[in-house]
Image (cartoon, rainbow, N blue to C red; front, side, top):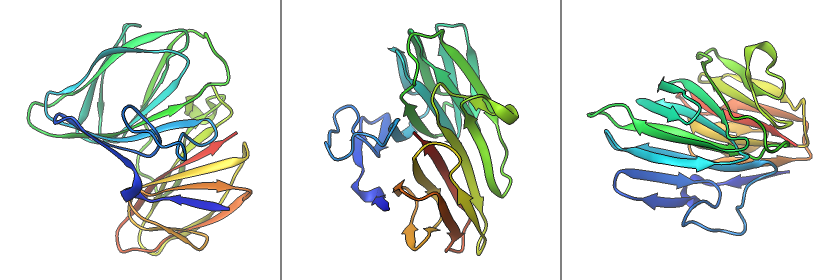
Length: 231
């Protein structure tokens, strides 16, 4: 079964310095029909004005993934990590028993766009952790996050995986779920056909009771998407 979450139906927040679209309930946006999916709790499509950002704030017992689409993030946290994340970079911050951090647009002139993703962990009260890596833009499926960090992936405290999907025009492939019971697909750009269901940029798909999916680029531009395997 595939249930589509259309891009235009997402929650919207506009604070001037921040414009965000929420796939699931977050902040002032609340929809009891969209509280998350399995362990996936948040996907926010954030656009941050030059030199602006999220002031220092805290988290606890959450796996927080950031994927930079445009610009650079300046990151600081209470564990002593001071990093810059350029476009194409993935960051995984394990909040564990508690961490404080800030995320700012590193440019005084250019906009920042990134996906903010929260996954609920399967173990609580752990030591906070920080990971960061660029996985490139190879066509096909590139695994980004796994429970055990296999193949130099980022390690998450959940029985879940995250993959990057890139398909040029006319290309397709089969995807077999290897862990968990559910899959969530978020399209960043392009038109992606999942079996017989068409997804466009910003759309999400909740997939249940399907182990194998046929994925195909149905447009003229490159498809970029994230695929979550969830418990």
